Length: 219
Image (cartoon, rainbow, N blue to C red; front, side, top):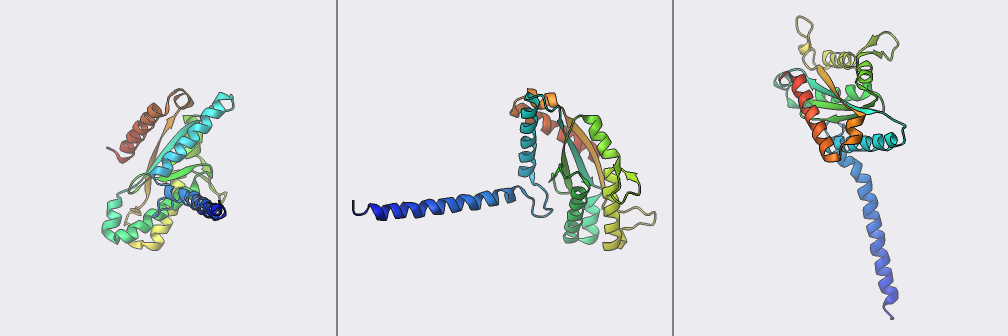
């Protein structure tokens, strides 16, 4: 019985250490979903946001408050191997980061941008239907209020300015610049999200993304 106070103190110290460890892990967990090279979501973060959005859509749909689906926009660098061949992998990584930054800063604040592959990025967009997704992507008012351009055009405008300034040798005689992006999109409907279990829904999403990737790459 005389040892009980000392035992209690030991248990209290252990519990304090456990709480501190849990707090540290909770702070580190979001970092595990980030790609360190581009500061975009990694594949783990990408699926985390997909399932988080699907959960929100299901809950809101049950209450009759939403008919949203999920749009996916695939971005791929044009002839990126040429970038690495001509300016080296280290500078190629700089170009990748600049592309990631241009995509993230051009998309809506509510969109989630992930690094999908080596030189491929993916935007996850919650929208009502495929037509709305197309309209958002194809008509966007320039932030300077000068004109209206597509999201892809605005991203590539930023990339071209960056490439001209940082790597002027990439400006060809005809004015074309290696290091710009091409893109395409696909859509998963509200019915598909609400009426399928997670396993089958994941099959649908993976299949759409695979088809989208091949289409953008021209395979």
